[in-house]
Length: 293
Length: 151
Figure 1 (cartoon, rainbow over the protein chains, first blue to last red):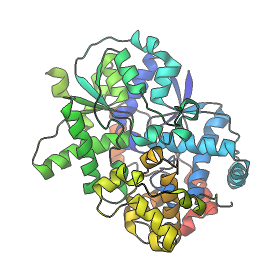
Figure 2 (figure 1 turned 45 degrees about the horizontal axis):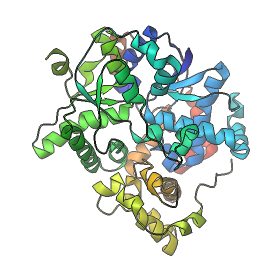
Figure 3 (figure 1 turned 180 degrees about the horizontal axis):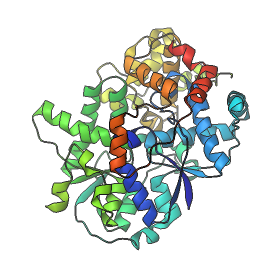
Figure 4 (figure 1 turned 60 degrees about the vertical axis):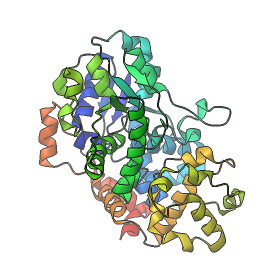
């Protein structure tokens, strides 16, 4: 299995531990990565809101790079997934937009043809690698209780993110994370408002305090069900929960300290990847008490 | 390139004002005065200009829950996004959004790769990141009109 690895902006700069754990887990599961000169996806919460045609053209440039290499893209961030999947779908479907974008890209030797797919790591793990193959690599057991947080841009709007998997009411409830984590022997819990936004995009654009109120609401439901860990598949959601808990604790004089783990870090733990590659030292909410206690 | 038609005013007439979009909206829960239904109705009654200068518009997290819940299956987030595009055309862009978008225009990324970042990556045994051809990114975004829009 070979993919063009789309790291995005946040992971390689702020959370290289997510990258190194992803690479280590991929190696253990026979996934091969090709690194390419990708730019920002660009972010669905920035460029797309300011100027849609620019968002579409820059996304098309990234898609073209992978097309030229004949590779599907693997993403590690919900924002990147959202942008690249939507742009890919829109450009495949709409010949007029495709023509317009291709005229813009032409001087740089690029042409969008619509030959590849964009896949988030959760889908690659469950559907391409397969749960049985991952299960075979499990080396360690942990008993903490995990609340899975998907994040909005991973699956909404379902008509764009998963057009082939819609329910009769054209909706979709994601379960990939619970399926993967259960398969490797970890314990996931159900909690109210499981699909609520983390708040990140509100904070990065306008109002961090208000964003943290959304985070606080979500945390309260996780705490109600005695969750001990939050699992995420997106660096923006990670930052919102990790930094958010520090800020919320300060503001409300209450201690919020639920460790947040990226999906490749959790798999790295059960696959017994060298701890130094998991990057726990970059977390504001310390992970070690959970592992050594 | 011709701008895609992302704002379809006719869709606004489909709204029957049930306010499920607003009841399910995380930003409406957290921000006083952010109200997706009111944005759509104001737009319908008073036109775009009555909405686009309001910075609250940008509080939308683009989570698309409103669309999931709308009984009329209106793509409410897309309508709000179109309003933000219109706001940007008139020069109303919140500072943080403008700064982030400008970074992408000029460097191809939202965040800079400082010396400290490179050292941290080295510590993890990671290769240096592939260079982004910045002139190409800037060239594309100049042709699409983003460079002109940001001024």
